[in-house]
Length: 118
Image 1 (cartoon, rainbow, N blue to C red):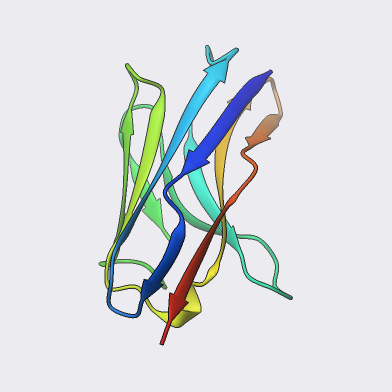
Image 2 (cartoon, one colour):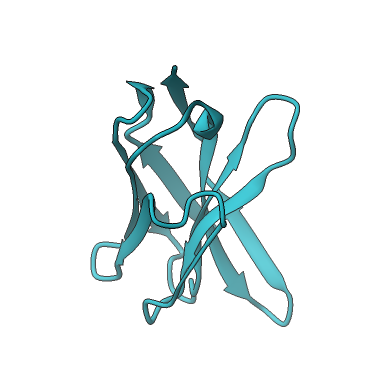
């Protein structure tokens, strides 16, 4: 199993910044993509940003230019720097790690609340 622990959420005013961190432990061998998802009340969980083991990144259109995902493979951590935050960024943010065993296997953190006030 892979354990993911997030930190760094909180309350911030619109236009502010937050940095989320996620540390992976356990059976970390074989993790390829790590990502951040978010889920707002009444909405489906959505991909925010993803990064592969060789550093390729992918962002949701709504966060491009404002959020940056990074990864430290030696420390088994992934970060999400969030700038120019908007009230619509308010959600529970989940760290995600993926392995492939012929099919994709997802591991999830417990989530961290991000609230952006207007």
